[in-house]
Amino acid sequence: MSKRKPAKSNTSSGPFTSKLPDRVFMPGIPPMPEMYLPPTPIEEGAVRITAVETCIPQELFPGLILMRIHTDAGIIGHGETYYAPHAVAGLIHDWMVNRLLGQDALAIESHWRFFYERFANFGVRGAELRAISAIDLALWDILGQVTRQPIYRLLGGPVRSRIAVYNSCGNPTYGPRKDGVMGWSGYGSIGDPGPLGDSYNLFHHPIDLIEDLLSEGINAFKTWCFDYPAHRHGGMRISLSDVEAGMKPLREIRKHFGNKVEFMVDGHGFFMLPAALRIAEALREVQPLWLEDILKTDNLDTIADFRRQSRMPISVSEMLLTRADYNQVLMQKAADFVMIDPTWVGGISETARLAHLAQGYNVPVSIHDCTGPLTLFAGLHVGAAVPGCCFQETVRAQIRTVYKFLIDSPVVIKDGHAELPKGPGLGVRLNPDLFKPGREGYRISQIKKS
Image 1 (tube, helix red, strand yellow):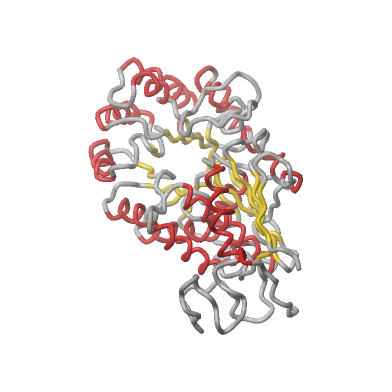
Image 2 (image 1 turned 30 degrees about the horizontal axis):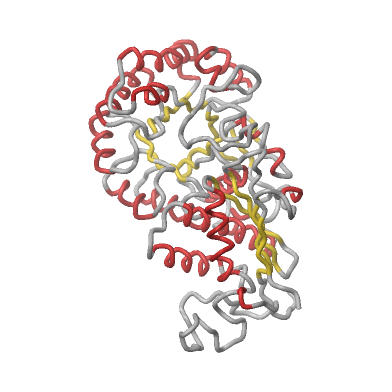
């Protein structure tokens, strides 16, 4: 790589100057020749960050925030996260760019840990960790492009040639909204009849739905068939008639297809322990692969108790956000499967760490995506590189509708498996037309040109 001069920056380019060896840590802190977690390049000719862009595709996916990180090498890294996008954008542009602009685009771990430690002083979960996630994806994408390798090779190389997927039975408006209004998290709607109305068809035409999935080679699906009783009554109880209504399509599917199909049941964290145990007792006869978030993950002792009492395989879940949470789940033997969302837990960096942690306990990992396309691609890279990853969640209703307006190349799924991403970095690019000054939700922070 040819040497390039450090980018010039104004006072907003970061708490560190780009001059070595003296770097200003913070106003009032004396210059120091060396420091912990440096943002500046160690080597000559490193790639430096020149601009950070975010946009919120309000008309397509109002809960999503998309990111591009520009460098002085002309390479652009792509990232995303989901939920409270304006709060995430505020963290990125009002604070985090002070660390990033003018600094080393390849210092992924240094940036990750610096942000994590600063946010941990007042609570790292939530928008803070999602902001770290989006940045982490974009920096890994830059590293892959610099090295001309897909990210899974930089994580240790592929351990499989393709990745098993299951289809979450959403619908074209589950997440994306025609009215540009973001829905509430975990409120899985049945949707309307029509193409890709998988959640509707599960309740009204379950046999036709599974035949359609099997025709595409997909033999595993996930459903949230007990959500509506919780919407009506809360999660402290569930009637036998409501249990039976949720069980009806699952019984039909198991009776008709036998062992040809696997399915998972998601409770979206709605239920308390007695109701969760009643649901688990009913589900035992149809043998789901796992029960996911039948209880909320805010009390891991209760989840461990639920696993013992229910005698059912339990998945815990993208609702967890930090390494300490996952470690506690594993130590307390509260889960048979661990699920991770790459753009909620801290990006590709933390997803890979958590997947290896779970493998140390012989607990398999599935990767969550019911949000955005880069979350899916990030999960595929980790799933390609970590032996303990068993499934990648997909939502065909999103892949075939809104995703095509957000990215330049779709994920390829054949015979119930996703192909490994092609090309360097993430192997996918965000639609550049979304990043236009004047669009609602567009922001840019950049080094001022001299």
